[in-house]
Amino acid sequence: MMTKWKRLYNALANRQNQTQSGNCVLSFISKSLAPSRFAGKLDLYHDLLEKINAILLFHGLEFNEDGKFHAVQSVKTLSEAEMRASKLTERISSRKLHPHLLNFCKKELLQNNYFHAVLEATKSIASMIRMKTGLISDGAKLVDEAFAGDSPRLIINAYRTESEISEQKGFVSLTKGLFGTFRNPTAHAAKIELNMSEEDAIDLFTLASYVLRRIEKSDSVEAKL
Image (cartoon, rainbow, N blue to C red; front, side, top):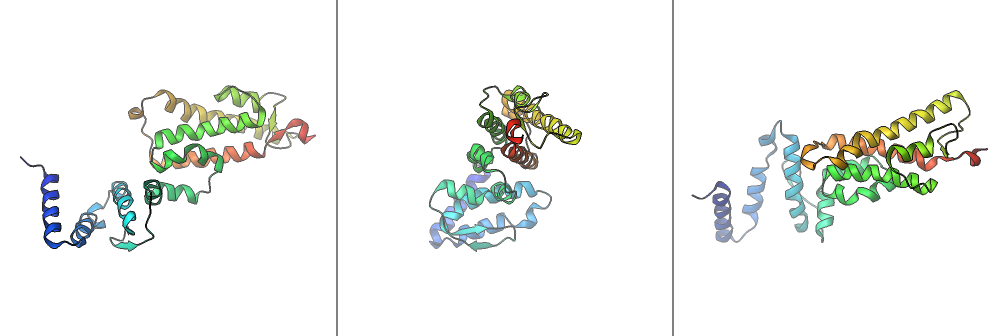
C-alpha cells in the first residue's frame, strides 16, 4: 500500500511532467503552507518555513508568513542558505550578542542546535576568564579563583565600597549559576533528556553575553590602584 507522502509526490511529479512548469510546485507549497492552516502552531510553522526556504533561497525565492513568495537574492552555498533561512539566527543578531560567544556557537546556531549551542556558550565564558587570568581550571572553581575571595584576581568595578564589593559577589554567584544551571546538565545529560526551547536558549545567550562583557571590562586589582 502506497503511503500518503508517496501518493502526493507522484501526483506532483506527474503534474510537473505534464506542464513542464515550476508553477505547480510553487502552488503546492503555497497551499500547504497557507498561514490559516497553522493557527495555534506557530513554532511548527516557523520550522517548516525554515526548511523550505533553505531550498527556495537557491532559486531566489522566499516564502514568508504572509503566505506569499518574495523575490530575494539567491544563495550559492548551503551554509548561507541555512543562515538566511534561520529565524533563530535573525533573532540572535537583533540581540547584538558578544562576538566571543558567537565565535564559540556559530555553527550550532546555524543548525538550530540549542542543546550544543548552550554548551558552547558557557564554554565561551570560561575561555575568556582563562584568557584574562592565565588560570587553567574550569567551571565554578575557575570563577572563584578569578573573582571571589578577599583579594580577587579580577574586579568588575572599583571594589572599594560595600556596594561595589556586594556587586562583585553577586556577579560571582550569577556566573557560577550559569555553569551550574546550563553547562553541567548539558555536559552530562543525554540530548533527548534536555528540553531546551528556542526562547530559553536565546535568554541564556543574552545572559551569557552580559557576563562576557563584564569579564571583558574587568581588570586586576593592581590596575585599579
